Image (cartoon, rainbow, N blue to C red; front, side):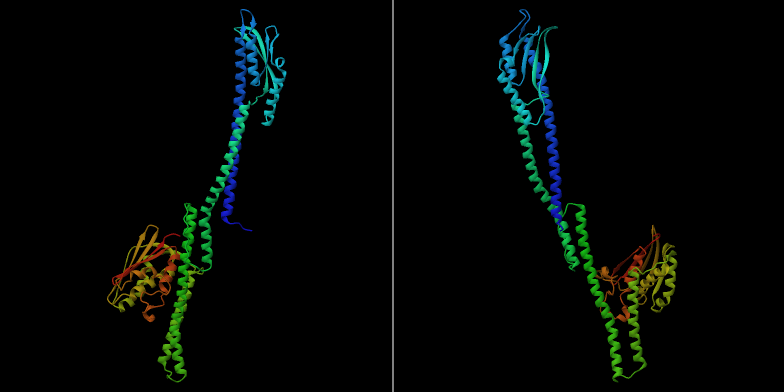
Length: 462
């Protein structure tokens, strides 16, 4: 059973926050309790020293006697504070004993202290410590102080510890509630773009390429994910449009010659037309045109697929340009066009035949769409890391709205143009695929009525 991303994030964040809260509470409680115990121990030591100091002042060195009333006052005050005193003179004779004075009260106080410490889960027992009482360098007596060791809590101390524990519990509960709320909000914020992206991916898988994810995220990774899905949907939508147009264009390209051949043959079979060499030649030309289209489509599939094998060697682009120019110069002269070649030696790593195929295509197009007495120029340039070839003409040019689509399959700038002169519309697509297979780029700049410039860049080393 799969859980939603939001649920998993909520549980994970909540668990993490609760663990942190518990650990922090336990540590804070332990640390404060430990420091408070040290504080109480220091207070006990200070209290014992204060008792000794008070007793010292109650001895009269002139009469060598103790003030019994003050001994009683000090003893009872200490008893209510949890300290049981036995005061001796220099000869070891008891001057005041809390247990002899009020055994019942001593037992009650001892029981209360023991109960409080057991309730606080602090182990210990009553222990007695004897201290000398001196005036100057003379020992005038001693005192045995019994108290709960190693330390004990007074009633106020015990109430403080209980209040502190209550505060920690309340803080833990409030923090837990905040952890639930904030964890849920944080999980929702994180999961929302992921959920919407996942839903968009499902829609794209079902063929809905118009969907876009609008969720925003302050996370770079999630923003990249959303952008990638939107880009994928857009790219698939464009590919779907191209696929449909390809099907339509192929059908249209084949339908025209097939219809013509069919009509010619039916007319001749039914005797409506006389079978003549001219009519058979027309059928033959249409069949050749279909064969040419099929060959172009097959070649396009080869250069766009994994079957394209490039046999790369070190070649000079200027040398290839001169060879292509020499082969096509006769056609240019027949149309009264000028074909000029210029540039510098440019060595690249490429397939000679494929690059020559690209240049033949570009120069042939330039000659086709350049009027009589027009000019065509082929230039090479040796750039850092790339060899560049430009094919320029001063022909009819390409409209601005057609430039982004000029390399698409079966695209023609003049859709109504006769296919006998316009070709199949695949040549530039093949040229682009070959250049890309070399790791290069191909681009076009053109103005309607002023001519065009096709530029290809081939990396020197791949």
